[in-house]
Figure 1 (cartoon, rainbow, N blue to C red):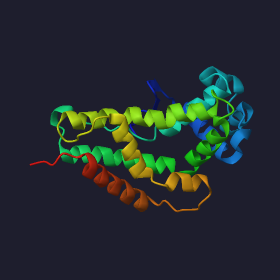
Figure 2 (figure 1 turned 90 degrees about the vertical axis):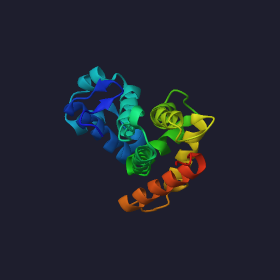
Figure 3 (figure 1 turned 90 degrees about the horizontal axis):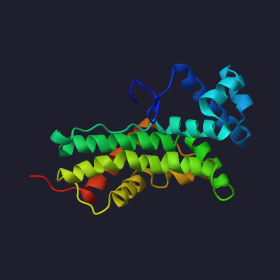
Figure 4 (figure 1 turned 30 degrees about the vertical axis):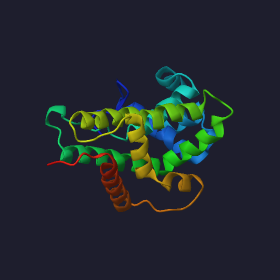
Amino acid sequence: MSAIAKIGDEVLTPRQQQVLTAALDLLVEAGDGLTMTAVARRASCSKETLYKWFGDRDGLLTATVQWQAAKVRVPVIDRKRLDAQSLRASIEQFGRDLLEVLTGAISVTLNRLAVTHAGADKNGLGAIVLENGRLAMGKRLKPVLEAGRDAGLLTFASSEEAFRTFFGLVVRDAQIRLLLGDPIKMTQNTINADAHTATEQFFTLYGVPQG
């Protein structure tokens, strides 16, 4: 990630980062038992401070999901000098970050909780994870894919369709297996290899032959 930690356009202080990290750790440990009191205790801060920074519990949950999602870096490209090599590198980096985050214990816990909330509470954790997770990921990568199309390096009718294809190639069945309790081991080497393979497959489907 960049040296400046952000959620959206808001720059987080080191103390706020510590609080969000504590909240994520507690989510893994306590799941639905997460409370403002527990976060305040774990982070050694007052509940008043939490309410000032994040509002209510849903506000804190939204911030924690955004903080987790921020680990998937936005690819930086130069539209004027974009070539196939730099485009591949940017897309592959995104794929590595995405797979590393989605298969980590924190995201698995968040997604398990989100699924349980999805049908019963339209404005709860399910909606928070959808908006700040999957939908946010699309908003980050689609401009890169569109830049590749504009440069004549990719061809597709819909950037949403192209993103969904790449997402599926990267994640495959790893996320659902982890959600269902399959103890698969996603090492860094496995993640790197899977992201590379997904990128190669994506360019086979959407890449424009060069030269």
